[in-house]
Length: 164
Image (cartoon, rainbow, N blue to C red; front, top):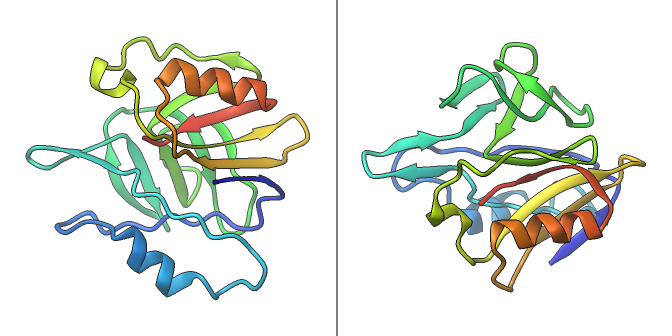
């Protein structure tokens, strides 16, 4: 599934204790809130054994995980358009950072990602083109991390993040 156009609303949903976020439950509970608008739900908050939260996430003012003291990701409060930048998660109510790959049309260095992250798999990503139009894609085709970044560039994305 791919959607390109105006981003009307960005919300993060989190339940970071077992059994974690159920994408289906979140979708069913929220699908009718905004008529004629898309709702994309991605269970992109990663956990390893432990569980240890991976990435930097802040949802509605609450820090969910902070793997790094400062990171590049999308940040926003309320109904603002998410913007990409560095954050220590103090300036806005929401922040999401898993794998930032494009910023101002430049590829970011994601070479430090493990082979498990770089493998071929289904991918979820979102980003903005030069006109601030949003594209969100949940693939049904296996892509490596490099292949999905190339795909984002081919679609005109200048600021983008891979969620899984």
